[in-house]
Length: 128
Image (tube, rainbow, N blue to C red):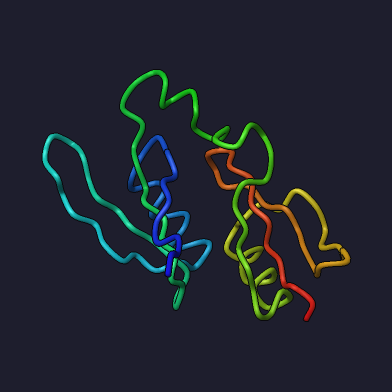
């Protein structure tokens, strides 16, 4: 059986990413290991998720240019919720910036939000 266990999100600073994703979005910090030479192995994830995010600090101009545009301006990341209204309200209260009001689509309730680095996410609750 295959599953996606980890994907990389390139950011300008480890600590800023941890503060945002843990303190504001509500993810858990799974690991923060010093690898030496300024490199860290930082994994975060929503509680109970099988998939984690590896936070990677950009180290050169090419990687810095990808920050916030890792998916060409499209929504590239999807945060599924079992209670959209609860999570939307909590995220707003914690300073997460939504680009739009929640809307209903054939697949569920959704609203686009952006991290402070420019990456676009959907908060969504699928209809059954």
